[in-house]
Length: 485
View 1 (cartoon, rainbow, N blue to C red):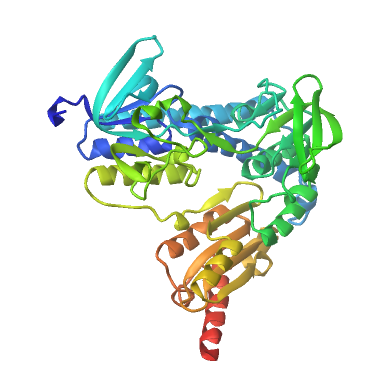
View 2 (spheres, one colour):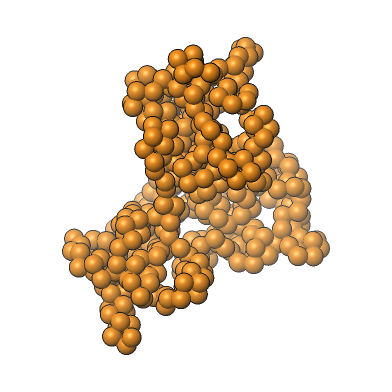
């Protein structure tokens, strides 16, 4: 097809953060762009994920802080009993969602992006079908197409949801009610954040984890410290190695817990509600990928480093994919970065993404964050490439700002190469860990050495000195290793 005959230069299917950044970036660079969205503008992050959950965490965090009489007494403060209104907390989250969704939509309109409300699908090379809410179905042509359809909560077999007594994070962010006793299935970042919210608002929580330890995706050393405060120190009964093999909604909700290996029934529980926080799966089934012979891996669309969709290992012309549907790192900021990179490549400016330098955060109180390699991954790389791995720890209890805040429970673990000093990764648990990790993410992205980083001056007294101390300890360890060799 002649370029002049295309309806659009670029069609983006999905208006989450990945699709939004792609469409806006392309339009700002002179491309004629359309974006197709079947649900709310902003996707999961704005409507059912990052944005509303952080609003709930902010409000419930205030409640927790004001209700912690022992902590406040350390400052000489004595507060009255805390009162809160569940509906107004929920309204705060809903208003924030509406504001950000509106801002996002207006930003696309100002950039000149055509917004099409409907469900998009592929109809062969450079062709996109869209079924609008009115029932009208049409096919549009585009020089390039980006798939950015995101993901949905994963509900394991045997679990029945009703959206009221058994639900996923999609419904939990609405905070329609506060169950007296709620079971949370899964202890990843979603489960931990909602456990933080529910316990702050007076709910009793039972946390069920199928793997052999609670918080299995986090650094084990951080987990030991974090679990004491985030789980053991709260009204949470955490159980590992148990599978929620069957959950039946109702009043009460009935749960069958089985041994994860033998599937033998171990226990039955009756609770007021269940939050299923067992991860997410790509939204790709209705994209008609077969029309271009694209084979997914567990639903994830395969891509190369430039975001091109792959067919049998080879890039398919004019088709790209970004965000959760690719399964690279299921984070909103990863999707946004991928969207921009895809457009840069469409424009002829070759770019890739350094996934190692993308940080992740869990917004509990205190927070958990990480970037780069885990310790296990770093050890495997060290064995493969034949270098010695360096590891140092920096503690919040030695930090003046953390002590002033009476929030000194915290730890940073820094991983680096002893042969070059290059920072490989970091894991932080403590006050404002989500903000602190960015400095290390920048160092990982630039492949900087701890020797150079140890010379950087940090503001005193700030939490950033936790990072400074780690860099200095690592530089000493690096120099010692060099002198031995």
